[in-house]
Length: 77
Image (cartoon, rainbow, N blue to C red; front, side, top):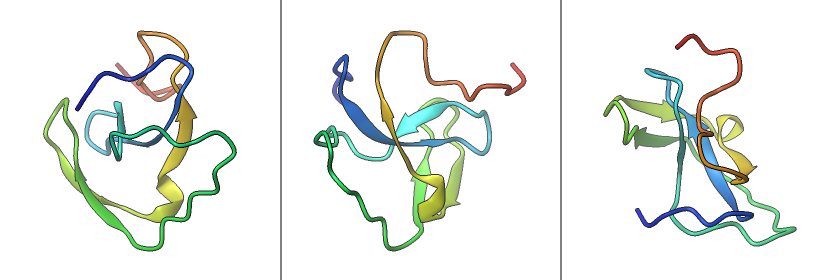
């Protein structure tokens, strides 16, 4: 995947194995866009290679604001 752009929003999930956040798709979500995910998706974490099925409610829009983000708040290290 290409590098994230500062200030852009992306569809993300948190890995069920290592809790790292990662993008569902490479392209940023346009500002103000309403994104509808209709079906569960099977995704592979680029960090730990854990593969899991994610329900639409687990897929979120998150704005990339600074480096060092990507770990769910409150997750054990």
